[in-house]
Every structure is written in C-alpha cells, then in structure tokens.
Length: 217
Image 1: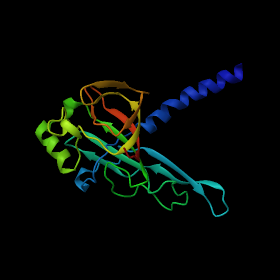
Image 2 (image 1 turned 90 degrees about the vertical axis):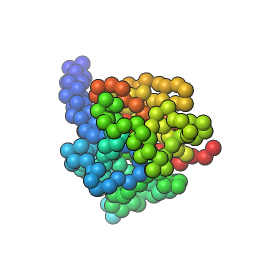
Image 3 (image 1 turned 180 degrees about the horizontal axis):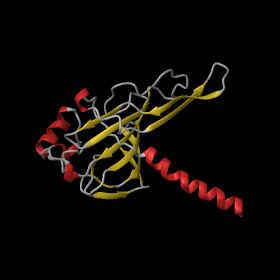
Image 4 (image 1 turned 45 degrees about the vertical axis):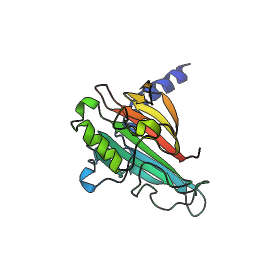
C-alpha cells in the first residue's frame, strides 16, 4: 500500500509537466503561411519521434520543439504541424522530419496529417467578418450545399477527410449547418466530411489535436 501511494504521488507531480508540454502551443489547419505569419519559437510543442538504428534497435531520432509553427492573424489560429504521411500503409523508413514541409488543410492523397490547433477567443479577433470570409475563399475553403452561398460563420468549411479531434484544453463550439455542439477539455470529435466551423466564445484559448485522413463518399 505504501509503495502504491508513493507511485501515485510521483505520477501526480509528473502530470502537470506533461500537460504543459502538450498544450504549450496550438495549431490551425490551412494553406501554407507566409514567413511574416510565423509564430515565435516560444509557442511550440515538444515532439519525440522514434525509429531504428542500423542494427534494428529502437531509438529516439527526434526530440525537441516542433519547429513548423504558423499563426493566422485573420482567423486567430496558430498551427503546429507535427507529422505527415504520404501513403497508406505509411512507410516506417522515413528519414528526417516528415513535418518539414508546407501543406494545406488536407493530407496528401492516401496519407495523413497530424497537427495541433489553438483557437483564440472570438473577442480577440479584430478582423471583420467579411475579411475573414474572403480569406477562407481565397484559400479555396468553404462549405458545400446551400451553406456555400451564405455560410453561418466565416470559418465554415468541409474537407473530404475523416478528422479525429481531441480537445486538449479550453472550450469551443462546433457549428454545423443548423446546429452546434459545445465541447470541453477531454471531449473527442470524429468529423466525417461535413460542413463545420470552430468558434471559441470563451475567454481562454482552446487547443485541439487533429489527425486528418483522406476519405470518399
């Protein structure tokens, strides 16, 4: 019993540092950003990537802050790209950093994309709604169907992907065509290629981890 209590105490002391490492920064899906929109190195996530040495032994090949961090001032998003695969099945013999690239919101055909998104509170976004909507249209992003003519939010869009999303911290509303869902830390979403927008109506940033996989109807 005493040993169990010691292990529990050690675990509770360790968890806050793990949480801080995971949510140190968020990310936002989207087209490649210009260098002027890059976020500071302070807003990064520690990323550990494993591999094998020539003898086949498991080793750590990357351990450090993920460098591919971008910020979109017009939409209040910050994006940390963590990994990209180009095929299914994915290749395990990838050399170098698979996230050292520019990529849009969707993954490569038959691949996947792994990123973290931080959504600033709507109250902190100073750009007007028309500019935000125009920015989305310029990036080729938008909803399908009747919502394409008059989206209920400038961030409304859909992709031909299955998206796995986990709310890391904060709260956020997921808008659909004529409904919405309020999400909190620990909630998960499986987005199946439907129109949606993420709206942070709270006072604190919301961080979400996303894995996107190509899909067909």
